[in-house]
Length: 231
Image 1 (cartoon, rainbow, N blue to C red):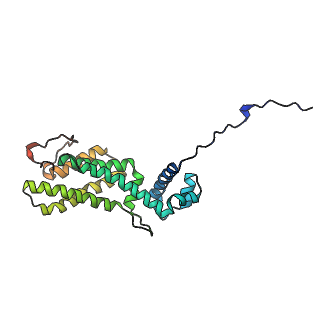
Image 2: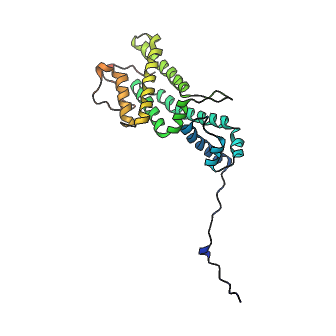
């Protein structure tokens, strides 16, 4: 006669049901997964199958949310552009000129530090067949336009030739952008030190470099009235 054993719950594998994602949560997950893959491999080398596999979903789920790889890539780029543009433009919209330049440099360095994958996608500038996507160069053009407007007002108040503002805007934004891309690879010194030295060169020039530049606060007042007032 067989003797039944009482059920030993310790022998059973207790599995909690996996929580289901909402549509919005799944969409965000797919965007984050795709962002990492696009940054790592580029648009052409990344497949919907790989995105779906890494996200733990079927390919039809990806198509349902984005219509295809091109649609997903466009969403990733748009989100990165929106994030970076907001950080840069907010730095240009207030405070005095020296502080503005400092904050633009810090905004770009901070974005690159915190969202390296997104920045690499923007710099790579892959294009799709279905639509033209925004790139890092278009963001720089936006920044140049805003800096040009600021400098034109400053030049006019100081008696300088305002038609030269576009030239100076290209030089300033270009210097910050190229230096920031170099810093992305080396990550030394700290972004605060890099920003301070960028502003040192922008503001003082080679002949009046400060040997120990430091970041300034929003209430900083330039000595000897060397800098113009803000708009």
